[in-house]
Image (cartoon, one colour):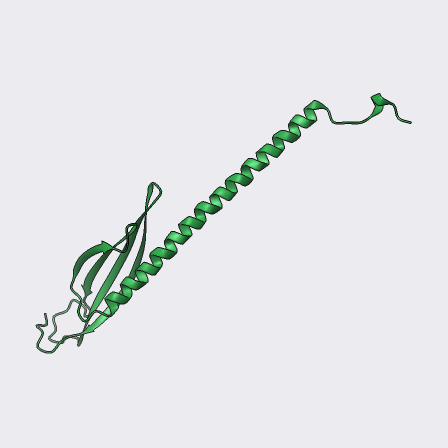
Length: 139
């Protein structure tokens, strides 16, 4: 038979400490879950921006001609784009009469969007060659 006073149990201090440890653990788990959701949303936005950039790059690569300069537009209400097309010289800076049969362009595309209170962007770059048209003035 046991005596009532000899029954080992938890003291009030032990219960309070256990509850504090449990509550800290729960807060950390909830924060990790929220962080995972934020990272998932950000990943989804970058994936969408990448898909939009691919479409725009395909559009540029199918164009018959390119003009140097900056252009911009919108994909939808959230995502917009800016392109910069610049002609690149293939020849060294030495005087010569030879002109290459193609023009070489650098195409830089930036996709921009608003994520919460932050502005985000993703940059993409490619190069494109276009055959010089007959009779076109060569520089």
